[in-house]
Image 1 (cartoon, rainbow, N blue to C red):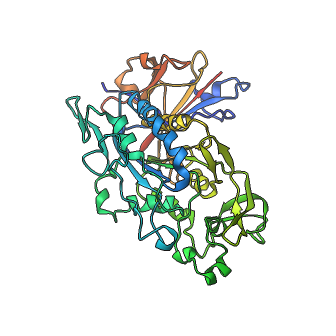
Image 2: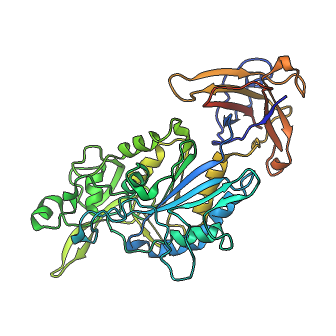
Image 3: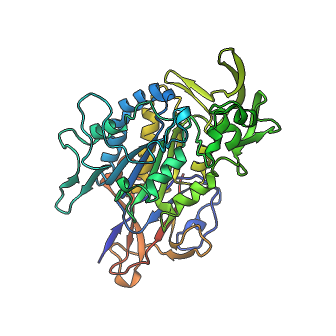
Length: 456
């Protein structure tokens, strides 16, 4: 008889108790109980994950990059301590520089979404033997690694993630992501695996400025008369829409800012959302995260430049820290929000950026899964468990899985579920794993188990 310990992932939510059916499912619970733990569980364990970092390498990132470099080890440590050990990872790094106009310090196509694997620092570290880091488990328990094992995964990652600060000041984070993954760059071949999770992580202190019409970077006086002074404020003016919006260059606070969907110069954020989701047959395989400037407040101020001096509009920082200032990341935050239950954000204005990296690593660990129910369950536990195909889509189907009448169950009772104490769950209030007994039965590809258990 085949017993499956389900790898649990997704988010925990506390929500009003929904309706259910008898047989010890949720509906039998006292209506006064009003919280539940929800788990969305892939039936097939997937320990493959491709992680792409898009790191701002403009001049303003000097302090932030130093802090990040000191804390990349914490990120790798969380991955290495995922239940079952380090997953099968590809880790790649690209910069935010895709060029645009040499006259403004952005020559050609910049780095063009090319995976960066050569160390820039002079500390003697070595990069991987290839365009990205590969660390994959073999059947015999050894690891297929393309880096110096004595140097280690964390040091190799920190080595290639220190991109410096000489990149274009018009940071095209989303466009760099797309060029890294759309198959147009031969250097990046084999990074993206068809059935692996894909995690996209942005680290930046300025918002996305993915430009479709490079006339936006025209430095000529005639262009300035139309487009305004040549500065990163153009990215805000033509990429973001706020209230009031009569004149984006007028100083003052702004509210309800969203990506502009009618820009003549910048790509719509939605086009990148559609691109990323289109890379996977199952969009739930995509995870996005960011260590970014706070989304609010958004305030237009002024600054003085040139000789003779003149006053031009400037977007004021949305947050400050010993590591520097950051502009409001309206476009990038909107991008993250389009991946519900698969996104996380933390501010780049934390004095120590280790918390942000740990938060992202924890999200990845949750997605990869552990066998534990995390809530403080009622005694006896009250759960509703279902096989769900195409969850969240118009063609979603659901089949209730009954609780096992006995453990081990009779073959005629399969499939069924039960909870079992698990040494791997000692850090959770329940100490229990959800077990689905299927015998020799199987389920269609893409099936998820959805479990709702009442918590106290």
